[in-house]
Image 1 (cartoon, one colour):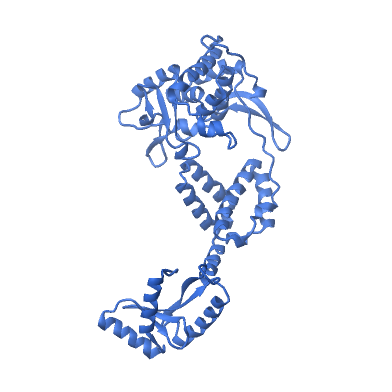
Image 2 (cartoon, helix red, strand yellow):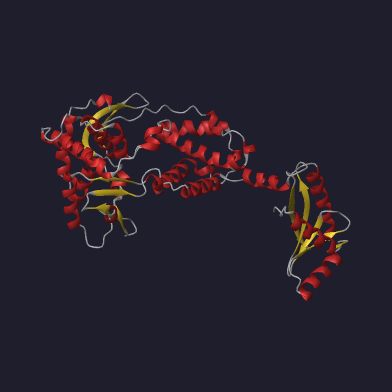
Length: 443
């Protein structure tokens, strides 16, 4: 532990040291314990008169050997360090502790900081599982969303379970590269990259504390190429999308319309609570979206969707907090946990092995469709970015630090998008001034 460096406190420490200095022996320590108990002296340090800096902390019940010395360069950088050796009389006798103290004091005189050495040894022995706990704790403190935290833990557990109790710093580059290749073959390129990005984040947390652990072994990985997904529901398929959505039961139907007319991520839409939704003002708040609570935002609700949500309110049992409730495996009421893709093929994509597969209308495809429709309807880029709750680029000083669009400023833009989307579904563009078809290859 670090001791106070204030000169007044140092003087007091020297006075107490001088008063409690004696030649430490087994008998002398036994007498010191008796004195502490009979005289009610409380916890005190008895310093050895034979080896300067070696002493014993005597309490009412225990005695612990310690060494104390100034460590570091001369001047303001020198700090007093006190390090414990162990308990008396077992496992440490006085003579064994004195020998250990001489070694420790000699190292401290040569500039070695035992506190730093001990901290480094403990940190380097941290297991992968322990580093994940530290990483997750940091995510919680940073206000990251529960979904982000759960996904990080899940992917590491799933693919690196057999490494969980291994010291993180003992995992080699060769092992990391081999495991990344295996996950790529068995589970896909995205899963492999996601797993080892989370691993790298855990390593980075450790390295901030102990720089000596060196470079993360993910340096040996050849990362899989990941093409950004750009699929949307093409304009000519919007009527088919509407037909399939209207055939669903009310909960899923209103949920799909919510995503289509707000551009919300699936998790943000599924987890809406009634307290987040102001049906009188037509405003929806998401308190803990992707990125955590610091990214909380509000969006206006288009009139077309607002009428559906008001009707939905009347169909949900009184007292249920969720707009789209479900029951989990434990029988507890929660929000809908999953929203399956619609049976609507919106495109084709090429897999890493060269084969092709159909692209279905997933919630995120519909979110991208909202963004593309917004551009086609003439909505400004800053407004599209605000509606999607995308953070501006770090170099975009204007959008990041100056431009703020409140809910009412965004309301006309949301109505433009709704008019464009609904107009396309009905085969008209009524109400969408300046609207034009979007090119799915350019959005």
